[in-house]
Image 1 (tube, rainbow, N blue to C red):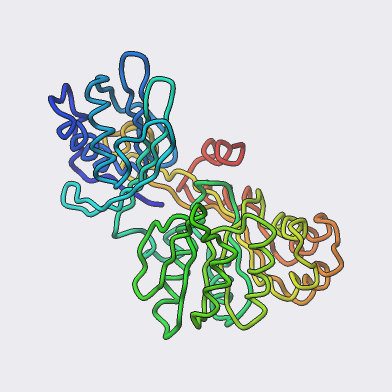
Image 2 (image 1 turned 60 degrees about the vertical axis):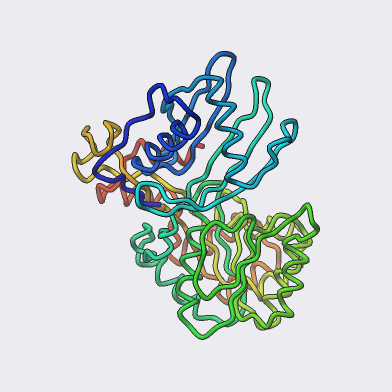
Length: 375
């Protein structure tokens, strides 16, 4: 979440003679800026290379069509994709060293009107899962809730938010803590992004019949104490996750909802019995990622932030614990307005409240909070 670019930025490769030179130069340039994704997009006469930094995307440069075709072939070889398949989407991954740092690179190929495009996700092996929750941006009250929830031996902990809101990093931070204990931990992920020591990580493969639901069922025969389900996407996975948390397992997962309270009606809509949800759900976090004000120029403009005023990102979040009173409300299927009134009386602060506080701290800006929360 907080990727600070190295002090020496690389240049985008100008007029590379070969695909190898172009690709090596693009990777060096992107990683020197703390980039998370690289888009290689072919058009009529040129290919545009775009990069995503701190959640925003920008044009990095262009390469010729000849270099583009050769780069796609090289990327397919590196990632284990089929070089003879051009009309269907493909995925791949590989590990590489770039400017002295090791990265896991995940890649997606997609046929477009002007040729195959490629999107690369760069995952540094020394990932942010080693950071504390406070350093990720969580306030002390939420850190306390997370620590308390992680001490449980059963139940369901959920992290919600849209794609790209840092849910995986938060869950992996939880698992990094739990992995220090003498526990059996299994994850079901699509795909596995970060490697966690002492954790058995399973890559979900829907095309081969390994789904979250049947992977979760099979993992119960592996004697786990803690199970992470990458995402609850459907009714079957939701029901299996709930029943797993009822049988003496701590289950961590994510859900696509706009707010923390939305998770409750969403799971009931998926077919989870309200009384079962009430007895298993222990904590819900909703989060977003916002850009941090540059420490060097305090948000003005400098070379470190590349004149954007921002470097790195941090979390804004809202969270609640499910206590006995809330369990009764969930079991009764009360409207979400009643749930909101209940948690507010107990000190619940929403995403906007957390964002405003961080603006007051000077670590982000009002404009950034409005941008993220309006998406």
